[in-house]
Length: 111
Image (cartoon, rainbow, N blue to C red):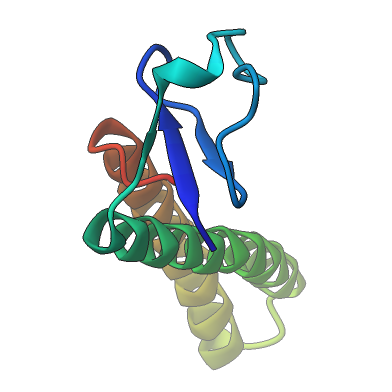
């Protein structure tokens, strides 16, 4: 995979050659620079990590709902304790994952 970066808007294009114009901002082909191997690896790792974080966010949202449902049933004190912890910890981990994605975006680790 070869990556090209628009020097105007930072759009990353995948292809054998840079596009004739930037799909995002319309800049001409001359405004694209070939991304070196080190940066390409960083972008690939960032994309994979961000995909994993987003998958985790979805699963954690589901666990939070399960925790809420179990806590509402309140079958007994140990079940209530478990489901309350599940809800609270899932919510916290989801917020941490979202904050990490935001940090990646700010550091241009989004690819």
